[in-house]
Image (cartoon, rainbow, N blue to C red; front, side, top):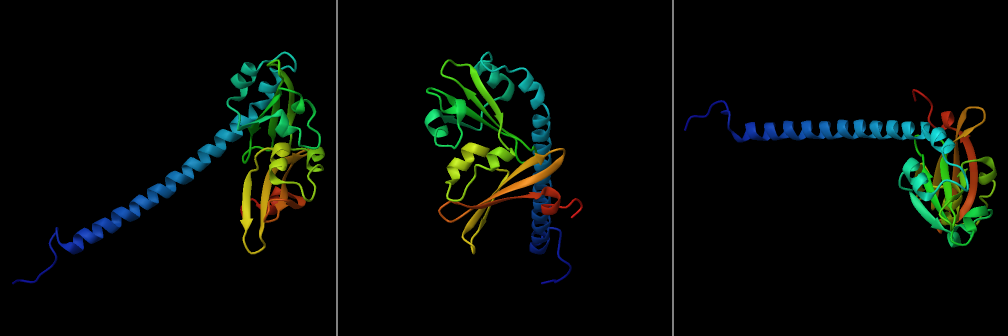
Length: 208
């Protein structure tokens, strides 16, 4: 038997080729995920930027559910009057037959909307819910679901196993133009422990 350099179709050749292909595939997947995430965030930012025009086209008591859906699309979640009646200040959302559409602009945006459709099929309220007055309603002992009905979907949920707590974060803008992160800390039973606000720059410094 003659032993020489491995031929082009030896086991060593195949192993090396497969390892190269696997490495290349992983690199492509990672790059694709990064591009996909950037595209998603850019799309969300663009969507949020169009909101003032959409809002201007909707008049309370005149705009219909179809008008709302045509401008805002499918809601993230729909809450009925019984759901919203459990929040501290539900207003029109707790009226008999009302339904409230949740439109989430997190994480790229700094707003969330709750749009209420009355029993007559007309829009009875349109609220941007990430505000200081709503943050003040979040009190110790409040269930997570109630917080969600007040503020909408958070930008991020982070569990801390050792502390047995879970942090929910919302991105909002403090006048005139400071972007902030409002955090609600829940215990292991998902009841509010504490709340607080921090400038986004402190949490995620540019260039950091």
